[in-house]
Amino acid sequence: MHELTIAQNIISIAEEEVAKQSDSGTVKKIFFKAGKMHAIIPESLQFGFKVLKKESKIVNNATLEIDEIPLRIKCKKCGLEKNIDEPLFYCSKCNSFDIEIISGMDMFVESIEFEDEKCEEGEVGV
Ligand SMILES: [Zn+2]
Image (tube, rainbow, N blue to C red):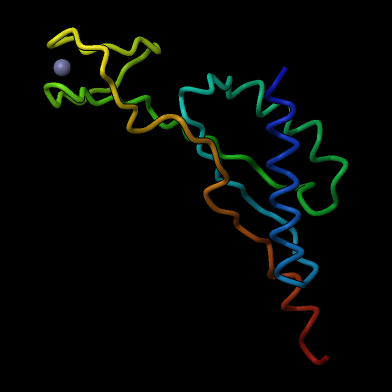
């Protein structure tokens, strides 16, 4: 189940980001972009995240926002661009197989929202 591995990676990235900020903040929300090419099942990813986040104090209360990037191809011959639902890489206009994938190949953590109110309060008067 590769969603579990991805969930673990997302948590690691969030923890690293918090460490970089050098305060004891916690993560509120993680925005994750999933290229359709990776065929991630959002429900499985959410489940994996829910299970694994319990072991981390930093992401314990965080929610995961998954946004799918559509698979988009461009024909190098006639220039046709379109979104496709299945990985069938040929041009429906000129039947060429000379296809370039424009988007849908990546998956990454786009941004992380921190729960930092608590830290700021704690820092008052230091
Ligand atoms: Zn074409």
